Structures are given as structure tokens and as C-alpha cells.
Amino acid sequence: MPVPSILLVDDQRDIVRLLHSTLQTLGHELDIIDAPSGEEALLEASRRKIDLLVSDYLLPGISGVELMRKIQARSPELKVIFISGMTERRARKEMLNAGAVAIFDKPIPLADFLDAVERSLGLVLTIFPPEASKDIEERRQTLSELLSGFRQKITADAIFLISDRGRVLARAGDLRDNSMEVSLLSALMAIYSAGLKVSRLIHQENLDNYHVFRGGDYDLILIPVNSAHALLLAGKDLASSEHILQTVEGMLLVRGEVGNVLQSLGVTPAPAATESTAPAPEEPVIESQEPEPEVDLDVLFASAGKKSKVKDLDAFWNDAVEKTGNAPASPDVISFEEAQKLGLAPGKTMPVRWTGPLKDTGSLKKK
Image (cartoon, rainbow, N blue to C red; front, side):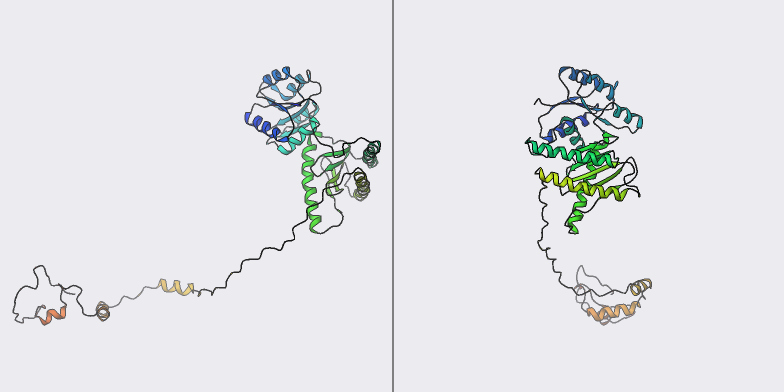
């Protein structure tokens, strides 16, 4: 099988580099060519056959649709994925009418982009065993006829058998806007997975749940077949109050038959991982501590607002003397009482006999 070639065209080089590196994660052998303009893209297309064109809708000097038509002249089987930052319905309609496989708005949802690339190039792996016995082929045909017959009976637009990864395994009919298929299925599979988790939490023995979206472009009804597959029904007025019960009952019947066909084909879901029953870790024991004494803030603020009374100056010094005693603070200083005894206090005229200076550098200080 020849290596598929993909041509990436966008004048924003960072987007081209992002898409290039993303495609390399697919694990398939691919020939990926980068082109920053329409002119370079046409030059690359003249040198080789292009299987898939991934192009911005607006390019300098040329539109993505014009570029697609020029490359299709050389490669009629060319598949196209458009990337656009525009929200105008006119532009989107032009891309759809041009035959785009998918249309992605910026920023590009990379998981959906990869899925669209795999679908376009036929790289999606089938769920069926790789054998072609007549019995298996008849059962596959039975599955297709089962979906097609149910779609026609209730006049729906489309019915899909989807895997838990959002891949379409069997279908009957198409959505009116095929460009939204990848993004829609990806979003619905998130809901499907959440429903499985709820079923496990409430210990449902059978997956007895369904999800209904009413109004908009389609009425959608999603019902799980098993823990790895689901049925999606799309159409107008399928979820109206007059038809919802009949529609769901019909889907439940089809679900049982689809489950039987899958089982006969040897397609069984992987066993669900059992939830851990290990006991929860013990909470750390916190030693009890005596509560700190509460502080009466009202009393505290009230006392802070009052001016403290200043003590009498003499009382202050008396109190200081009682606490510290009469010891002089320095050997070169005498107290007032000692000065009185020596006749050195003012107003006293006691004869003093000097035998010498107290100290050459001394001084008298009054406390």
C-alpha cells in the first residue's frame, strides 16, 4: 500500500508546525508536506499525488476552495479538510458544497483533527476479526440491514454504531452537515463515558440509561449497547413528546439485536476495571490542645481608650528609691542625703574641712 501524502497549507507557520508534529503522533507512515502559501502548495502538488489537503480557507492571493479545485484537477480522489477562523455562514456553506470532509475552527481541536485525518485516509482499524468467511459476512450484512431497516421505519436521518473512542463502526444514513460529525461524536462519547461511570456508581447490572437532545438541527438519542459500544440516532422530531417513548422502545429492541450480532462476531468489550476496594487511609490523629484563654476585646479596647493617670513626680522617685535602694549609680556620684550630711546641700553653712579633692575628674550631681 502506497504511503498516503498530506499537504498542509497555512500562511501561519506555527499552525503548520503544530499540525505536522500532531500528525506524526498517529503512528502511521505518512508523507507530510508543508506549504506556507497557495503558490508553493500548487508547486508541491505538481510534483506528486496528494491524498489529503489540509488548508486554511483564506490564503494570500487564493482561497482554500480555489486551491482544492486546482489540485483536484491533478488528483481527482483528493480529500480536503478546511481550517477557518471565519464564522460567516456563507463561507461555511461554500466549504461544505466544495466537498470538505471536515471543517475545523481555530483553535483546532487536535484529537478531532486526527480522527478526521484517519477517516479520510482509511486508516481506521475495523473492530471485526480479519477473516472473510461466508458466515461472518452474512452477520455483518445483518447488522447493516438491521440499522438501515430501523432508520427507515422511524424516518430518521441517520443511525450509528459507535465505539467508545467515537469511531463509527456501522451506519445507515448521514447527517445533513457531515463536517460536524467528528466533533459531535467526540462530545457525545464524553457523555457516554460519564453515563458508564454513573451506572457503576449506582451498581446497575444492565446499562439501562439513555441520553436525549431535543431541538436544534437534530433530535439526538444516545443509548449504550455495552461498555464499549453505543447507538446514536439523529433526525427531526424523534424526541418530541408524541414520539419519544416509541422511539426509545424501538432503540432498546435494536440494541439487543445489535448486541447479539456483535457477540456472534466475537466482538466483546474489554472487562471494566474494578474499582479499588482498599480501605481509605486513616486520618491523622490530632492531639487535643487546651483552648487558649479568650480575650474580652470590648474590655481591651475600652481600657486602651482611657488615658492612664500620670503618677505624682515625687511619688515616682520615692517608689524608684524603694525598688533600687540608695546605692549610688556610680562611684563618682553622691546622693542628696549624703551631700546634706557633708554640708554640701544648698542653704546649709556647715564648716567643712577639706582634706583633698574627691577626685580630679569627679563632679557632684543631684539626683
